Amino acid sequence: DPEHGCLVFGGAHTGSARLLAAVGASANAIGHVVVSRSDPIPPLLLAHEAGHVRQAERLGVALAPAYLWLSALYGYRDHPLERSARAAARRWRDQQADADRPAAGR
Image (cartoon, rainbow, N blue to C red; front, side, top):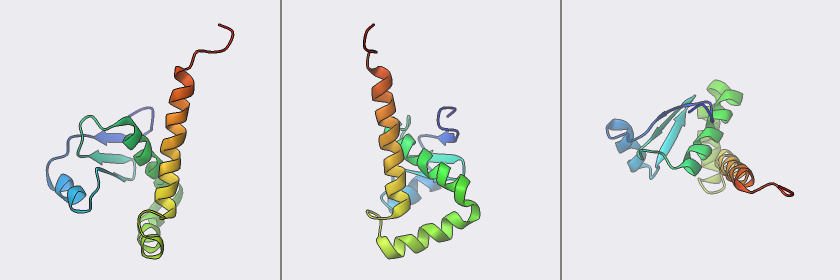
């Protein structure tokens, strides 16, 4: 997906989909790759996963251990990396809404 700078595989139905379903997830980002059970992937979900792609760019190989450690400390809902990805999705949504509004004075 050029907009988000990642490769997207939608409609996963093999081992990846079973793993996602087992943990209650609809999609997952691994480096610059987003795997989703949905095809097409809902835009807001893709924006969320793209937030994780940015995290992978910043943290590199430290992402997985950091994610697991923070999971143990905060759980999923209050997980700092998940909160950051949710914020990225909200920013993307707000940018889309702003782009759809007519400019004043036109």
